[in-house]
Amino acid sequence: MSEAHAAQHRKHPYHLVDPSPWPIVGAVASGVLAVGAILFMHGYTAWVLPIGFIFVLATMFFWWRDVVREATRQGHHTPVVQLGLRYGMVLFIASEVMFFLAWFWAYFNASLFPSEAIGGVWPPEGVATFDPFALPLLNTLILLTSGVTVTWAHHALREGDRDGMLRGLGLTVLLGAAFTAVQAYEYAHAAFGFRENIYGSTFFMATGFHGLHVIIGTIFLGVCWFRAWAGHFKPDHHFGFEAAAWYWHFVDVVWLFLFICIYVAGAGEVSAGH
Image (cartoon, rainbow, N blue to C red):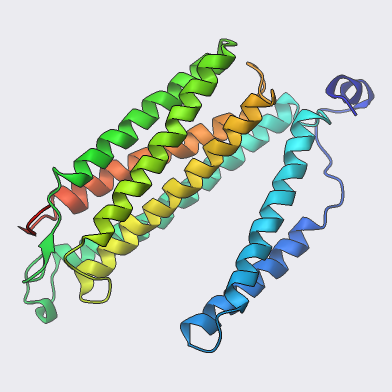
């Protein structure tokens, strides 16, 4: 059903979602993934974990495919529905803020009140931290630049400039991939490990989860690029792109806090080569 045809037969601006199998399928997939992770971490078996992971990815793909169809082909995403989607995205980002607040809390609790077990100093003695003005600064510049390019893409979309939107969005995806590559290199050359002390644990948990969000955001923007190429977005109807842009700006802001609080303020003895 085309968007115009759907609008003619709609008696109200709301979207009454058709019965979908994906909520229950997603719940089962998440359960399999959780059980697989527990079994793997306790050394029982490893084959359940990838099955659960693939199950979850498949559920996400097919569920979001249906949402895209509702927005493009079926015309269900009216202005009222889009407003609800925006509220939902804002609440989701707010929950992500609280998620990262927990890791910052753990880091500050350990750094501002170092225990006797680590000698009462921060960073703990013998920990060679990264030079904040080497790779971390490079990654900061990469993410800040990506924030500019995604904003460029958004403005181009609103002005009907399809080529500019695709260029800006493509550059953003490349910059996101570059950030991940630099962070992987940084991790590979870290002078401390995850399990060695509280510094390594809090550092890798905070920066690692941010890195995971960068990967998710890069995939999100990559999907938006293909949707833009397929003509799914219009100057006045492109919430999917807006949601991806909001998410990416959130990732940028979190990184700035990580760079200032953990890399710069938490720098101690700098390891050679960094």
